[in-house]
Image (cartoon, rainbow, N blue to C red; front, side, top):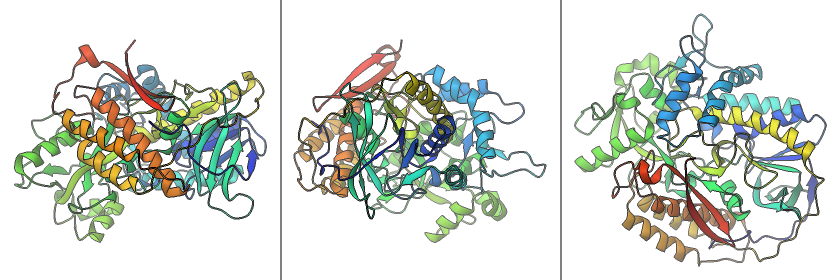
Length: 545
């Protein structure tokens, strides 16, 4: 069972707007800017974010943004690489929208002020990452692409005069008497009239809340990535799909056996520039495992690393970029170089110890090709959404592009939907008590998920995870606070991921079942869709049409 809503005080303040966008990463900012352009006028769009506007996952993105921008490349080639990485489960319509609209979306991002790295002749500098057969990754500041995109979009937001509320944790969806989304409740740690629990009443709600990496003990995700949007959507009865496909980034800096929380990422672009994976004996173990070796899709590389660690009984492998030279490290990867040196490792003279860690959710709140969810008036964009672009495994650097393309698509959909929608009805009151878990549950959930629902999965471990999660779900609290709300969201999302992972008895993409090591198209060429029915999660299989 999961709560039908979060226990919280009654809203003590309220604000009205046409559209509320929850999240200030690339997906949220692009959506808010595009909505403001389509619905001009003060106060028609409001941006709310859990921490500071510049917090979240976008600013941590190192490698770049993928698009067919180079001579000789094409959307069709980008499409083919994306479908290959998705292992049969991509929605080709959504992927085609991504790759055909992507190049112009990147150009519009540049027009908004984003400064990407250039070659001496002024053309965009493009690199290559895992799963891409062309150099099509645009980057900024060497390995600080996300930070530059965030800077440019935040400046554009300020110039556009879009109001924002920071330190606002989204709690639950408001709905009118017809069942249509009518806003959200928030807890704001602020001052004056917007402090504590309040309500934003709106005719359209866009979830752009980012990822769920904090469901696991070790992740590349920031502290705020506790799956809040997915948990809210489940409580609201929205369909959530493909949750079993959690991508583990192959190369995260290994900081020791007890390291937890957000871990430093070593971008795939380092391998794109020629660094090699080696084991404790100095052997390049990805050769022969895949034709692209270290540049195979991420699931292949993560599995290769875990297999070699198991074979040798080691806790990590190494990324060897010594042959790149000091000049390349300083020019292309200044952030990674500084991070490694801060931890006592010099990539110029020694291999970097790396290990896979939770990185990206390919699944999420199910949407159509225009970001609409199964709840009228509720939209989802970015990592919280499942547009069908990623299938069973996201192709490297498609995530930033997804936020660009689908943020603009959602704005177009909202402009049309609001014209056709009936006037907002009376907001319905809660007809059931809210639930809440003990804040201490969070750490235990993370350990359970890492132990049993991580890179390697099997029936015994998944059953153990279900039992432990069910027991943790009985540890309730009556004291609403940030820690309890986050713990409840983490537990809800973990329960849904585990149920889907146990149900899918095959290995596909980033879902690796040791007890079912083969891909099974006859039984599993389809999606697992999770919903909450009366507070009980149900997971149903839907074959591809």
